[in-house]
Image (cartoon, rainbow, N blue to C red; front, side):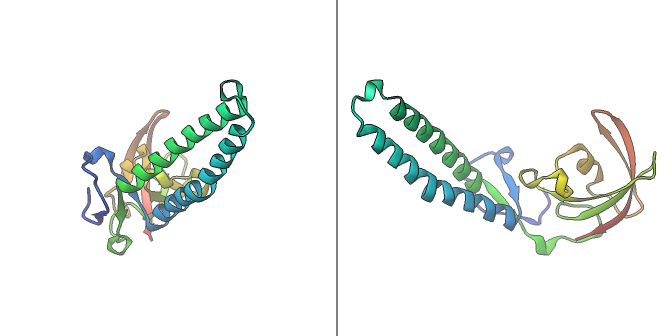
Length: 171
């Protein structure tokens, strides 16, 4: 990986377990984790306590449902904790616009139909095509990485091969 990544915590995991995030992406994950721990967890605990107060637990559907919800919540919390622990933060100060890289805004022209599109290349966990945020590991982004303005990239996607010309790179 390019040197502009720095390591938050590897927890002894393999390189394939790493998740690359922007500061904003990491902040959103931490907010979600805090919400689950501080709001959802106590709420489910109250539901379990209320269901327990209703008597025989072996025939108490509310208690069973609350315990199942608790199990699902704890799995979600563990998943987020693992994601955060295995994340690498992208150092945005070391990104330039000389060649296409993660966190660049790239303007491309489809050579077949002259259609111009613009995408922000982001880590997979932050991709949102409606917002123009393209996952850096998508076929199009992979084909654009390392290219410079004026370069042509041939990109193979499930629906065929496209030829794009890079007409702009910005932050």
